[in-house]
Image (cartoon, rainbow, N blue to C red; front, side, top):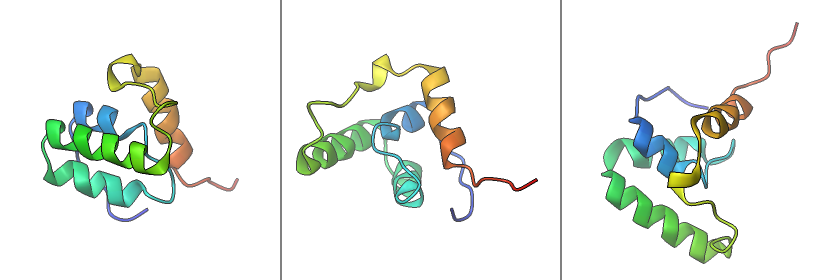
Length: 80
């Protein structure tokens, strides 16, 4: 992952449905530059285009624990 950017919790929740290791920089960059409403629309369009809209979890159903767990998966593994 590239340089860390600070984004609001509600924006993180909005992108959590599409965030993974490969696209994290892209979606975090989008979240930093757009409103929550715009981000929700972009995520919805992405899910529809990718065919994953039916299985998507609405952002209001995501808990802090789920988002925290997802973020931990994005962190690089540390070797002991």
